[in-house]
Every structure is written in structure tokens, then in C-alpha cells.
Length: 564
Image (cartoon, rainbow, N blue to C red; front, top):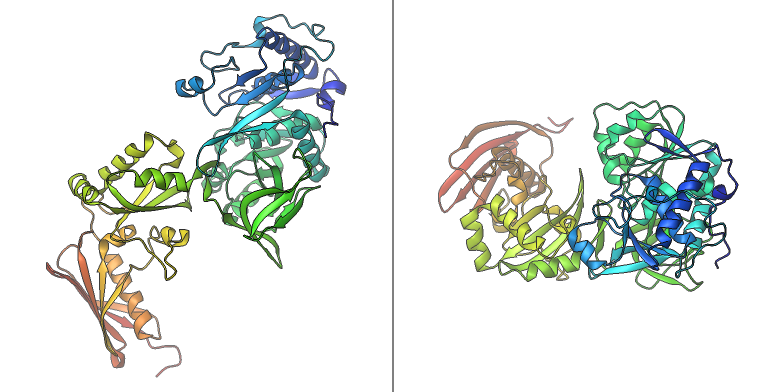
């Protein structure tokens, strides 16, 4: 299948004065690029190794791409890492190149830029390619190899699908780093192969897009950055954004709609993986998913996607763990069968996280889930052991949360650490004996009603039992050093539960004789008594525990419209 040239066409045919990159706002011509490429090849050849680690700290996409293409021309493979920390360096005892601490070759400029040095294929040390590392379903990193023909062919497909709307001179700008395949493929290889100039610097914050000059641009971004863009109070830029592409984690429709309006851009969400490359795309918000040109999609007996792709090494079916359903509106994604989720664009294996939690002496049971709201994060619902209960009592919830994160940080990446915690008397098992992700997420919904047990029930009176330790979401943000159930939550629960059990018609109109007598704490087991007086359209409520009565009040409802 290797029927594509080793070098992108513009590198061979573009005018020497044409602009390939903008580096620190200064244009870089193809003539300068070719000279830098020759020098980089010379530097890499001196290493006499088939593989190098290419790490650039995300600062300079131009330098990164020069090193990458030079590796391929020399028959070398470039391994990409997310960081250059000592622990990472210990895993890869290879020469490190790029602009990073302790690089074997800090820059190619230490050698003469002699374009005639390698007029032909150059030295061949092995198999040219690129390697990225992703976590598998159990959390163990997998080595993913891509040959140059695979990334070039994907670039050609992307240009065929989206290039018609992009005039020559359209500049590509990115907020995603180039140490993973989305950043490499969409931000660098595609525009480079198609001859579009690339802005070398990485835009870390959406406000920085306001520095762009006029003219057409393509924005390659992550959902995390787009969320921040949608939340900005004001935003202005002289640039025209013809197309914005997002990938890495789910892009919510509300965020897509806000960014499409703010940037006056076409929003496209891409879906795929390092193993498969791009699989499908949709016009956001709310569009159906369509397969990439040349791909064939099907569902197996579990409802998981399988595919045939011209971007893979063979024509066999490739089995994925992405679950989906076919509807009248097209393909709809529903999650992953192996419980691997994306948090800020990075994979987190929930099974591995839960195993780490269960290994802690403080934990009896645990379930985790992704929560996609203002930010992507992992949440954890935990039933504590006796040791855990004692530790929670001694430290308080805020310090205990921090303690739990510290315990997990020994073996887990920071992105996998839960940011929100619920400590329950029991996990929310359903009638099938399962705990669903939706049940876990609901524990973190501040508007959710508490888990209930009906103590007594009559026509116009209910007594409900509530274990406040099982509804900690109601305490969020209220006196973290002394968690107290807010009075507004007590009123809201009484109001909504009265409407549920007494089928009250009409809307809330007034509250009277409201009294708060004692505070309610997370460890309190509470009874909520509701008495309904139909002739008055009134509900009287009171919260009580072993400590006595905590609060009481009268809630009045207006008669329905048209009623006497």
C-alpha cells in the first residue's frame, strides 16, 4: 500500500520563495525549509541509530516537522512523548532530539546547512515512521506505529473532504500540541501536504487567537479550549475562520453552537484513534456522523463499531470498542465497551482507576465515571471501609479528598485522578444489580433529589428517610470546613417531593412560618415529614433527626388556571 512519495509534494515542487510556515510571525520560505531539512538529516545521520525520541515541548511546530521529515528521509523512526521528565527519559534510553531539556541535538543549526549533502534517499537505518503511545483498556501504554504513507494518505483524504472551501494561502493555527496524532495529522501533515502555510506557535489560550491578522484561517482545536472560548465574556479577532476542527474528546452541542457563532465558522468534529486514524466526522452541533472517504463501517453483535480503512495496513476488519447505534438520523455514538474515556483529550481507563481505588485500605467499594460539564473530569463514588470512615472523620471531607488523590497519584497519571468525590453508605445498584455511569453522574447533580426510603405513607401524609451522606452533592460549595445542608435545598426537596407524592396541581406561590432550628450535617439520618391539606393547597414539612427537629415550614400552591 506504500504507493505515496516519501516527501510531501509541496516540498518537491513549491517555489523557493513560497511561504511554508510563519515562525514567530516571520514567514519561512520553502528554500529555508529545504536547507534546514538537509542540516537536520545530517545531524540525525551522525547518531547512527534507527530510532530517536522527538520531543519539542510544544513550542515550535516548525522545528518539530523538520525533525520528523528528516527522520523519514533517513529511514529513521521518531518516537513521540508527552513530556521529557526524568521518569519518561528512563523509559526511552535513546537519543532525544528537539527543543527540550538535555536534548542530544539541541538544534540542527550546529551543523552546516548543506542541501547537497543528501541528494538522494540518504542513509537508511531502518523503517521510517512515527510512534505514539496510548493507554489500552487496562491502562498499559501501547506502541502505535504509523508509516509515512499512512499519514500522507490521511492528509490527502482530509484535503479531498474539506479543501474545496479553503483558498490558497489559508493559514492553519492550532491550540493542540503535536505530540499526539490529532495534532500531528491535522495541524501539521495535512496543511503541509496540501501547501497551506502553518503558524508554528501553539496558542495555549483562546484569547490569543485575537492576535491573528486578517485573512482566512483553519483552527485545529480541542474541546477543552473551545469550552474556554465559549465562556469568554468578549472575543474579537481580525482573522476569518473558514473551518474549525475538534477532536480528542466529546464536543457538546452547546459549546459547538457558541463557538460557531462567535467565530462565524463551520464547526466539524472528528472521531478516531491513534490506532485507526480518522474514522468519521460530523458537522457540529448535532449533526449525524459520516465515515471518512474510503472507509466502511459496521456494527458487531455487541453494538461496537468495526471498520475497513485505507489508512490501515490491510483490508481486514478492525474491531473497535466504540459503541454506537444506527438511527433514522444516522450513526450515533454511545460510548466505549471497555470503559476507556477521554478526559481533556487523553485516555483514562476506568477499570484501572477502580482497581487502584479498591487497593486502598480506606475503600470497600468504588465506581468512577466521566463528567463533561464546565470541564472534563473524573468523579468517584466510594463506600468507605472502617479505616476510611475513621480517616474521613479525622481529616474532614476536603482534606480527605486530597489524601485520596495523593494515594492514587503514586500509580496514576494526574489526568486520571478524580476531582470530585462522594462517600456513600452503599453504591446505587439498580434492579439488575448494576451500577450505571448515569447513576454515578447523578450523584454529582446539585439539582438531584436525595435517595429516599418511605417510612410511612397515608393519603395526605408521607414520612421519608434520607441518609445525607448519600447526597453530598447538595453540600457542594457550602462551608467546606463545616459542611451544612443549605436551607434553600431543604425547601427545594420538600417542594418537589410534595409535588411528586401528592400529585399537586398548580404552581408554588408562597412559603410561610419558615424556621431553621438546627443545622443538618452529612452524617445525619433525617426524616422528612410532609402533610398535604388539599382544601388549602398547602404542604407542611419538617426535618427531624435523633437530635430533634431541624426545620419546618408551610408551602402554598396557587390553584391551577381556570380552577375556582
